[in-house]
Length: 304
Image 1 (cartoon, rainbow, N blue to C red):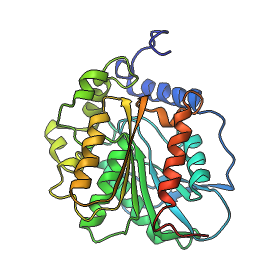
Image 2 (cartoon, one colour; image 1 turned 90 degrees about the horizontal axis):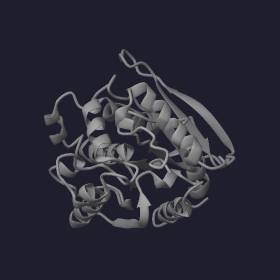
Image 3 (cartoon, rainbow, N blue to C red; image 1 turned 135 degrees about the vertical axis):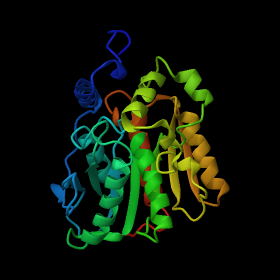
Image 4 (spheres, rainbow, N blue to C red; image 1 turned 180 degrees about the vertical axis):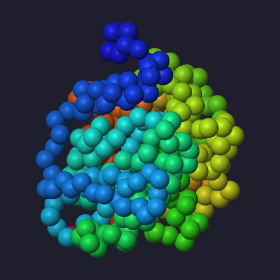
């Protein structure tokens, strides 16, 4: 549909215009937002930090106390997206899993380049554990999750938590994650044009996020390049067949599995990058929610 109307690609727009266009796309294809038991705006205060407080949104599927919690990190190439754009997805995720969802508005590039998004996500993870009891959440049952650039950040958090002695993460949910920003993949050549996410747009995202190309070699940018992937939380990795990042996600799942990490991997046939939030277009979006819910209610899930 986008190609039929000859809409400009995101990388052809100024950043602020691209952000508005991305939000309009998310709004147009999101479907009807679901009701949840409660939604709360959070301020994550940071002392003496130039970025000021972080903003997050807490979704409760029920008013039960001690709910397990998902830290959700949105996609958008570290440049686009926010809590509002993912509102419908986070509501549906909370209802499907029965878990609280905390969606983070991390700082975006190019105003805040690498590793600002990583720093914000790491701060939010530790803040969430510290404040869980006061929020009536179960800080001992924590999941990190994200799509695309958010999947990248979730994978990085799993590594940082392992190497930093915690917080303990029960599971990681990585939806078409970008994990290796240096390698060329066959899926990138096959689906890099005309399939929603363009290779040129990916290069534009990298230009916004990184001040220097060498930063892509940092494992906080490319978690696939970490020295070790042992002792990481169990992972659910979801990819789309017709996505430039499909092979990247599949390779990362293989890397985790080879390191002894329990992995569940699913590639959704015929789907394009971004499909999981497009409820009004794809039945498969609902299927991914069901798969996430089944996975998070598996071994280790605290029963009500």
